[in-house]
Length: 484
Image (cartoon, rainbow, N blue to C red; front, top):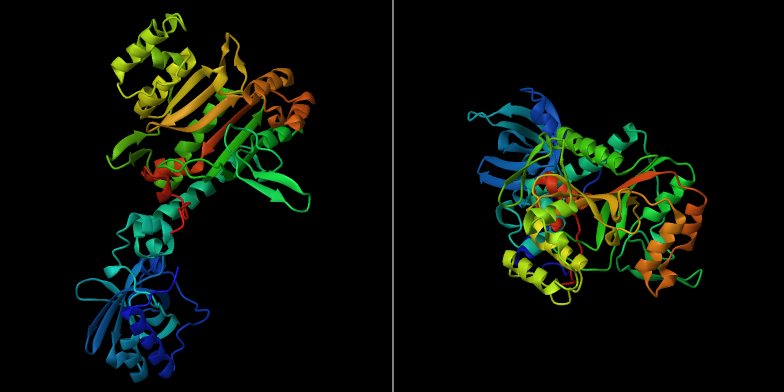
């Protein structure tokens, strides 16, 4: 981005030059200081302290000037009195602008209005801001500009900055929870020779040294299962995945995922992890299990146990008990008519099977209405080729989709550990593209993988829920944007 070329920048350049002429270097060095939040918390009248921060407000009143400083931990008022400062320092204060970063050494003092302040005895220039900040530091009004220039958003918006501190704490406590449960954090390749573990379009690149096409991973699943085969019985990975697909309020092509695998576990083992992890994050990071979500401030209660309901039962609740008794494909048009009676805007062109129609109904009419935490279980096997079939019905797989606020947050599986059945499922998924089958993964399964439970959580969506945001770009520091 080109630097601003306007009167404000010119004025700041002139201020910088004036400071230099007065002996004040406009860009300083290390400055030992105390965080403003600690100063406020440990306030002792008359104590001498050193603080630093960005100037958010300046009021010049002749012999006494006031400013509000922010160092990222909090805000604090500093007072600059002519009779408390060397003459050169008081004169140089006139060259300060909003956005400048200074260090202040002085005495703590409470004003007549009861405001905790520091009376400056000496100040140091640490960084001159050459760009004019948003008016009165109320923040960026343009939503897209907030995403493009996150540094200005964080500088001016306390709520946004606190949200990203909370994101960091969510990730920290997630790791702690899993380590405390005996899981080992691992790292698997992001640069892979073929994409696997999900059905998604990858980003492609070229490995010059090997003269070989490579892709950025779409999921770490197949590598993590190799570790289960190798005897690492409880593993997790928290990192980036990449999918060369669309961008919307809940999708970013570069996103953060947590995947967890436990040998000798199953779907229910993964449900137990979810019912333990999310309340832990609510208690340790958020401070409540009742979260206000989205613009409507809808209350989502993360107190377990969470509802468990079969996919088909949800469909029958909406469409009637006899829905799965319809004869397909003979009664396909009748079924479409029944569906349109419930929702006229269903996209049914090209829908030719019971499976496709039922899932369109679930996707557009059922999932979005699952507001409180819900495990949707026993899904059609066509949707999840890496999962194990239900013992009582091989047309279904022993999985869950964990849905909250009308969106899937996390799938969890009883993993398929039969290499023969796994090959059949992957061949069916690949169709004529048999080169997409990861033969090394099949070979690993043939070495013997114990019964295993696995799950994958979209960390960005989890942060959205726990911070009450309904847009993914509000919880990703630097979301993907079209070049301006």
